[in-house]
Image (cartoon, rainbow, N blue to C red; front, side, top):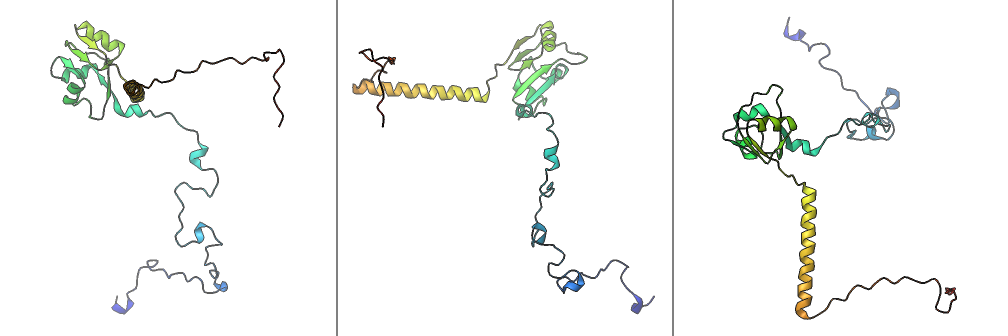
Length: 206
């Protein structure tokens, strides 16, 4: 081997394709890109999953299952895991301190373990409890105070109704202070089909 005999590995350096050098080369005029369309542009932008305009696979296949937003902030705690909680009161703060739930959890339900190994007397406050877990806790002399969960939509409706009531009361107090009496709502009067003279009222033609 000599310096004048050195050469790159075969296939490592390919000659660049010269396009736009006459129609005889096969890559003239449109340079092998075809006519118009996304592929003929400078920067083709085809999104992932695009199948050229036909019905894509993600739409051809049926939808699978259902995802509840509440599932991301809900958790189940096994009855045996309550042995890790310090103290006799079990609530959200106690579960968080024992690292049985994370900070994003808002709803907790205590479930019965497959092999119950719980012999403590505890007071459950503000948590959901299954039927089997309730029986196991009450058998040890514990008490359960189930939480009354209020959904965000229900709370929003309640606040809106309270604002309307306060606004109406404020308006009535202002009218009473100025001496203005709010006119009473007119009673609905039923229309009679016949006029007083016994003849049917006829509409005027335009």
